[in-house]
Amino acid sequence: MRSQFRPCIDLHNGQVKQIVGGTLHDTDVKQLQTNFVSTQPAEHYARMYKESGLLGGHVIMLGPHNDTSAMSALSTYPDALQVGGGINLSNAQQWIDRGASKVIVTSWLFPDGKFSMDRLDQMEKLVGRANLVVDLSCRRTKTGNWIVAMNKWQTLTDMQVSKPVLEALAKKCSEFLVHAADVEGLCNGIDEDLVVALAEWSPIPVTYAGGASSIRDLQLVTKLSKGRVDLTIGSALDIFGGTQIKYTDCVEWNRTGCLPTEL
Image 1 (cartoon, one colour):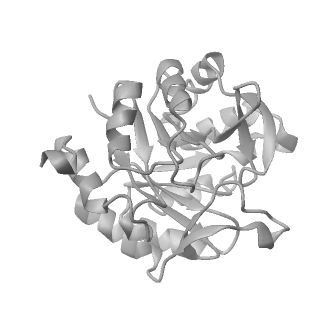
Image 2 (cartoon, rainbow, N blue to C red):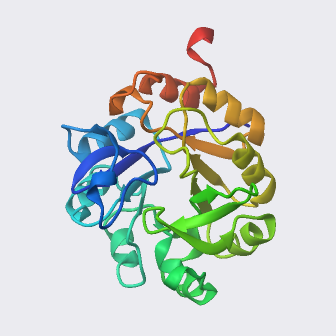
Image 3 (tube, one colour):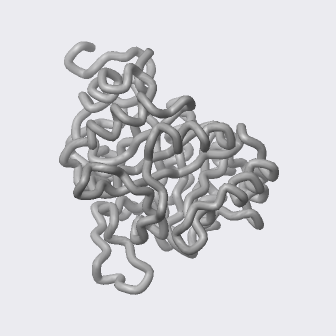
């Protein structure tokens, strides 16, 4: 059993971008740090993932003005991409109908920063457990704990990532998505402790994102998680302007489990 590469399409103002985690603010646009802005539309990447046979990727809408781009990606590769960002009870089923394989929910589950099991129950009843991903993207505290962050990772919630929490939430969803917000977009290495914890604590599939800087991170995550946690790679990829990881190498890893030097 080995960890899989999971692709992504991050959208900001309708464009495909790679953004440094935690720098996206609703009010202070000057704080935004962008690693990459694509000249290609979202459907270009969806078509690429389709041709490569990649499953379980996610389309994340960072703020408003992204619906059209997200819909174009989903129509290009229907029933294969998850969609998140602004998902709530009023639009979740619409995104499933538009071709999302699953919907990813975060902020809506935390009114005023406090987790609502009632809202999760409602969402599960609406779209079904199999179609629901809970995003537990988080920040690490000085004490070493991870706290779920919402609103583009600006706001810490009242939820600490832990084994009891993951076990309880797993009864209502089929997968977790976890961005390590403190290292997201920096390409300086993954949060190894978080990967280990997720593998030990989660009874359902988990995709980790944040800090990947080498194709060998796929091998590392496989080792740390015993293949129970998948890895999303963004800013380091050549298709997103990165220089450290080739997209074709990630596809080959999924196909054969081999690193470039072993081919």
